[in-house]
Image (tube, rainbow, N blue to C red; front, side, top):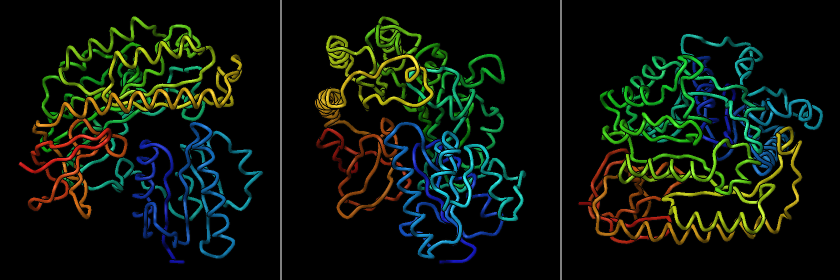
Length: 431
């Protein structure tokens, strides 16, 4: 055990990661040694930033907490703190069931952790953070919370109402991160589409992205988690005209069958969804759309599922993930809709959908063979340099495996020739 050292473990999404990075900076300013996601915890203080979105992620968080409780019993750490979405959502139950944890903090109460350790929260560095990603890219969280209240989603129960970060604060942070060497900004929020409504009375995502793109040194901006209803179409000319705004949009559509969309409380129908996709592709030629789909939601019979399959074949999403519905305590669906579809049926539908998407992905990947793509180099593996194109978000999208024909530098951009395609990887040689 290393005295005056804090290990922080982050579970869940990149929005959680940004919170961790802010906390790391506060610990650093208070004189602690810090380490993120250590291979083996050895700090006297360990903090777990938990996820509480769906049952699988909740279980992962609980398993990690219990594992660290055992380490504490064996004397490998002195204090164990838990923060984030799981503790925000199930605080009382966790306190009763896992008393070995020194204290649980809600998602927005982690500043109290410093006071409990006899340290003061430093407001002068509130917007600063320790980057835990490779130094050339980062995540920019532009808002917290959500006002949409989809039937299946517990996020509003955890994070509360949608709250935007002021534009000037985000621009200042962008400039500071560029000065530190960051080139790629992955803009994230639970609901990008609503950015600015609470502060400025209108959707300000187009202006934010345009002003970020104008900052010298910003090489790539990539957008994650737009909402399809009331989409800010003024964003599309910015994406089309700004070379450093990636032709990429992550927009969760969930389903296409009108009865299922109604049950989900998505406030959009099939025709409106298709019109949105067509407009995105028309106004931003070459755009790669990443979406998330759900199977097994109440009201999805075989007819509705086959409609989802047919639509997926037709739309040919460049990037797609999917998951099976799980009933989440406190949501509208849990209160008002019976979860009657058997788990094995949900899994069979999920498998079929993902097998279809794998075939579509391979066909789209093969279209890139013979083209020249600009990539950023993330790391150096034994046989290849590993990079990404503008169409690939870190950790979730395909990577480009580049032959070591000549030395390439991590964090730099290069043109490469695509020589071979796999469903989730491209092979390339440097130009």
